[in-house]
Image (cartoon, rainbow, N blue to C red; front, side, top):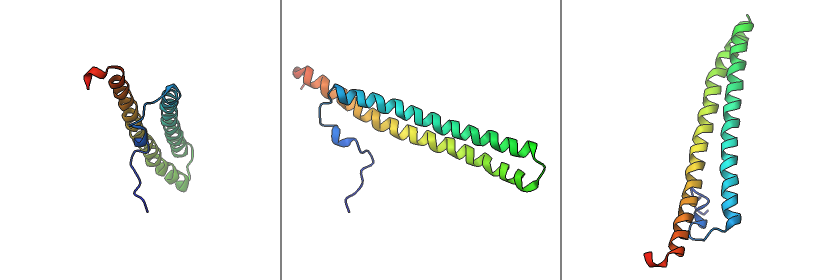
Length: 111
């Protein structure tokens, strides 16, 4: 079985990116930010739900469920942030390498 690469975008490092590719990178950056906000929204919703269960219900089992949701909401936000940072660094690698390649091709005297 072939070894899985950490960054699936490394195959594009040696190629010159055309406008379509640059726009795709921009869309990917925006999608990455939307995903982070979705994780945060889910975490905040879980946190508000847990506070509601703790404050408004007197039944012990429901209060325990509320206390269990607090770490789950924090975990959701932490996982979202880690995924955001990982993807952002992969995107940055491709974007930076593309700009370096363009600069070298535009100015052949720097070789």
